[in-house]
Image (cartoon, rainbow, N blue to C red; front, side, top):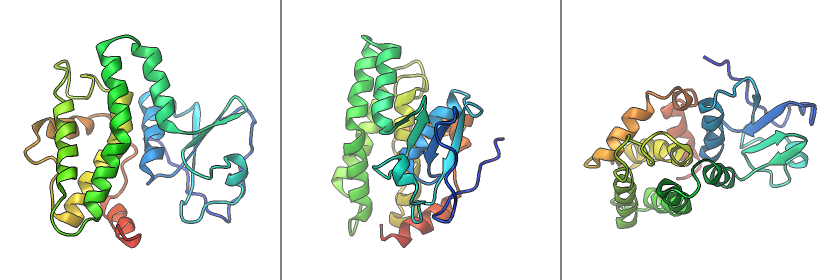
Length: 223
């Protein structure tokens, strides 16, 4: 098991920049950063890509000079800073499975990712029962997981599409249970299998955080 580095705050000094080390600037609790973190782990790049975790509520001022958008994730590689994890995933998918039906479905799913997140977040914030829009979004994901029969994941076998969704599905499952008393996988057999199989993948389990801590943090910020 990898020994994770401590989280940096505004009081911490900047690490060396452009010294040949590939660094992933991230947060342990940010689902966007978790996409990149899972990809790193799944590809076995723990030695090649060093984590630089930050406190999102107390980010170091020097990070704005590293990445002017002042967001995570960002990666330092070959004397460049690269952000926007979803765009990077799209590019890799096009290179790996270009022209296939899976590639077309992958592009479709990545295009739906932000709409799915919005529907679930709005449903989480709403008063009363879970919204129809959130239910429809979850049903769409459950249906999408049944498209290919060579495995339990979106493209059958675990892929970068799963990495795009995993941090959010994982978080929403926890938040809906804790805030709405609603199990997002209930009655959705494909999502149930999906989450069960995820827990067999080290790249995913290595980045999981304490659910009670995440739930408390979410409630603190008014979700």
